[in-house]
Image (cartoon, rainbow, N blue to C red; front, side):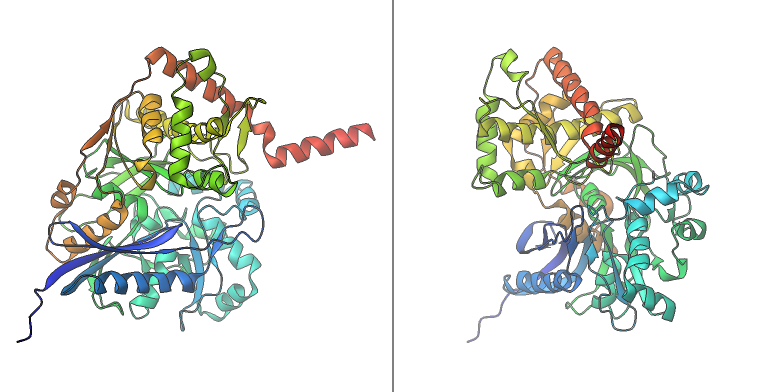
Amino acid sequence: MVAHQTPVRVWAGVDQGTTSTRTNLYDDSGTCVASARRQSLTRHPRPGWDEQDGNALLAAIEDTVREAVASVPGAELAGIGLANQGESIIAFDRRTGEPLSPAILWSDRRAGAIVDSVRATPSAARIEDVTGLRLDPYYSAARIAWALQNLPEVAAAAASGTLAIGTLDTFFIHRLAGGAYLTDPSTASRTQLMALDDLRFDPATAAAFGIDIDLLPAIVDTVLPEPLPTTLGAPLYASAADQLAALAALGAIAPGDTKITYGTGCFIDTNVGAQPRRPGHGLMPTYGWTVSGEPKAWAIEGGVFSAATAIDWLVSLGLAQDASQVTALAAAAAAVSNHDLRMQHPLFLPSFTGIGAPWWRPEAAGVLACLRASTTREDLAFAVVDGIAHRVADVVDSIDAELGAAAVLRADGGLSANKALMQRQADLCGRPIAIADHHDNTAAGVAGLAAIGAGELDLAGLAARAKFTCTVEPTLPESQRNLERARWREFVEATPALEPPALTTAAQRRSEERI
């Protein structure tokens, strides 16, 4: 007699992130039953240039979906949700789907000169008003313009009418879903090409960057109006930018709810309700999600562009064997109870790819200060962890100022398992932080959105899946927290003169004065 396998219905959440591609499978209760992951290779052909191979990223999606499904006996893949890197872009041929450029990542800074040229035009103020985003090479528009201006294959395809160019989701969906060419508002809102008030690409803004709006994809709902058949064995029901998928999965579905996702970078998002908000305090507006039958969701965001990158940097220098040892080293340094010694510890600005909110200095590089002959590797590990926590606290302070109240914090992502970092984060923010039991909430979010698209779940049901059994309480006295935060702000505000262009300009000026 042949034993029959009991079918297991699963929903795939594909998180195509910067460091890796991960597919998690969730059953109907939202429990993760399988996971598969592929590491991503990032190339740095020049300082400030960050690239990946688009075909390799696509293959990683295909491989992880199939591997995860194969690992669950009797798995029946019911639907797929796809999360993307947000601002990263790629150019490809509309006919064949083949890449015409590398994937140029959100952290890439090659388009700074294009941003400077647009900033000098009369269009600059209008662009910032229409899109809600300050001009910065972090957003997709400048990288799209750079590719059109600097890559002959891209320019030739544009001239012949065969070019597709946009965020990475457009490429993946085109290849996986039979040539569909679309994106969703949560991703489009991060391009600096979408009008904040009507969720459409703005022709005048595109023209200011030298982009023909006809090159861009259609913008459709986050939960797709109609599921798209794919080559992966199930329909695609939802597509979203990574941070907004995590916002939904962490239960931040009501105005004022805030989440911190610690990954390659660290991004702090707050739900602000059904209307777009043009925040001050160095924050950016971003679209949340469109779910049929639910109010639109808007958010505000601040980003720390180097988080796990900074931890990995310490490991690459040989100062620690792995990220867990960085945690142990930092915890050893944090155990020093002498207040005077603590106030002399080294400071590290984690700005390998510029500084985002609230400072917005795209030319910034990492800075390590206050070194002594007595500085140990424990001190350096603490400085890196401390720098990440301070930068997150900078953003949380801005969100508090924008909301007029202290945001309630919840956290996820790989580094949320770093106990030294989470304790330092609670201390510097001066409030508890609830740590999600499940760290991969980007995948959980898009899988849940897929189930919503299939009519099997609603937004409240997705939010109810979030579990927080660990809450880290602050232990630092308020007076000491204020002093340490003031010391940090003095440090950050002293570093603009150390940015590479500023140093070069100063050196040239002094050289000319000597002549």
